[in-house]
Length: 232
Image (cartoon, rainbow, N blue to C red):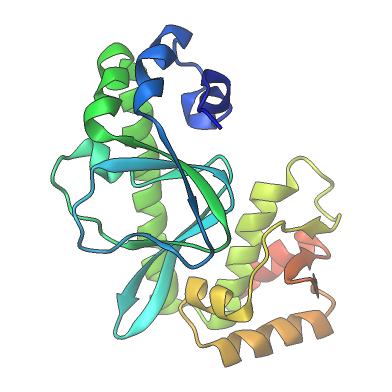
């Protein structure tokens, strides 16, 4: 299926860009399909592409003391690999791996320059968003160092509630639309699977969450946030 301006414009990153620019960029955009568990790029490899997720999900991870640590988890509409656009020749600081079958659009740095040269606001947005991601990464390092596994899981769930709960009633249940194994969640919070499984079971026994078909539902967002304030 050919890549159209409509498909590209549906990605949040490209909203607000002059429609005339799409015709110049479209010939260089590539669509790629990856099976679950496929490596998109490896930590230490040279990067010159940015990726946009049409469907599926991608984890960004690194290896620390022989243990896999997930730094970020991206879904439909998200983008990753942006550091390759900011500084040429920069090596990838982490590995990107699909967590499900995934469709991506990719664009090389040299072609993305067409957008930068004609829309300076786009560059400003990219740099600002990258700084926000770096701040989150620094916070994650702090959490891994000082918080218990239970607190890390609660904080992760609270973050997802904020992302997916929208303007719903704070005390209403929030179903997190991400299918996760216990191992994947363990990789995200820097813990072993057995510990994560025990924490999740305890939280179910406390009626904080429900788990169905590998998806977590937070039963009471307000209660979870109060618990987070108490534990941190």
